[in-house]
Image (cartoon, rainbow, N blue to C red):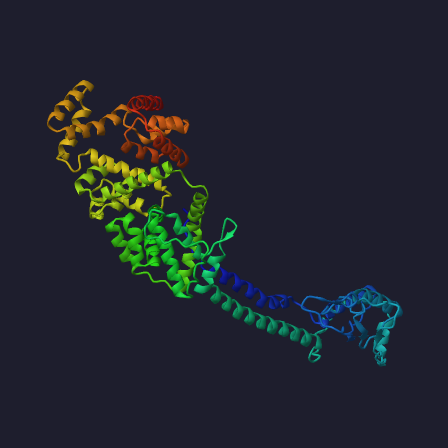
Length: 606
């Protein structure tokens, strides 16, 4: 049975917040790309100028260079990182990235206070033109005026030294310091201002979009969580390609003919519309509660598939009165009382109730209603209906029988059982189950079993209940059977030879026939098959088909079959139960089946 899963809107909100954060911050991320001022390439120009002049034999100081340009802006300013046009290059290039490639109206390079030869000038124009993307043939390089010549008088001694034939060693002049090429501030840059305004416009636009999306998402979430919206979604659910309205639950009530409280709705009359709001939610709870009351196995399946905490939440959804009517017959008074006390602490808002009802209806009731619809289209024969009713009555009688068993008898029965069977029995026992659980050999394993959610079928739960009731009856419940003497008899029988064992049972039967019969039923089946170790049984029957396996298990008394069936796979267990119920073996067949199972177990031991 699928659990109903209440989907919280928190993941939707988280995804929406991440999406809106991306929308808000992506302009800032795009604008974070570094860009250079058009003048940031002047250091490269100065370095190229110095290397070129030195290669031409220039010995003087490296002249300062001044670059003048006027920018030809495009008509539309592109976004951050975009291109202004094929011929303009990047919108904010460095000065060394081909300023003259159609992006500027004019580029002038001026050398201040310098006097170059024609060869030096031509080499310099070629080098700078390649760097700046300018044509060396055009007139874009200008030079400042040369300094006037200065006449210095020469003394006779100096003239003599100059005209002397002696060789003078003149030290090489020290390298002149690098010129300061830091450009002076040119005032506000129009390009930067345009880029800043564009980025600011993106941020404001994104913020406005963010506000609109947040307001819209808040309204959408509130509307989607309202009870009315949940009920509208419930009516849109499909069952076999047909829209399933909650009002159709009333039509399904006609399927439960055994209930005298049902009032079938005529086919020609449409069901009256349900009132809006909370009244509609209460009506839905009433309809679902009616289905669970008329189908106790559904209520049992819902209860067995949940641990105590989840069952308390489910009972809080239905309310105390409906929970008593629905779960009282299947839980037992003790467990029902504890779950109701725990459920009283849970309070749901109307929107939570609508969502939980929708999930419960979708995950559980739709599957059950589809089965009922199929049964309505292909009804069972009277014999099948009678057999189903007989099985349900047997199971109900078994649960009622277990609820009234005295504590000592239930303890003797459960102390050697598996935690699963102990848990199922204590859930339906009317006595102090917690005190009895502490007396059992492994209370921790029982507590762990109570927290599990096993997908047990109603059929297997009913089989286990009938098996427990049968064994309790075999122990002499309701008669004058001495339980201590029964336990002593079983210990004595284990140490006797077969002939002595039979003589002992006959002697006991003269005084206490109930004791002898109980000892016989409790001892012989286990003795004949070697103790029925579950792991041994799995190895012995793993390769058997369900028919042969059912034939082997049919040799055991019914109370001894259920613990073994539980250790089989779900499919094999279901098929074996069907075969065992359909073909109850005769006494001779039981003996042959016991021998078959004993042979299988001996082969597995070997």
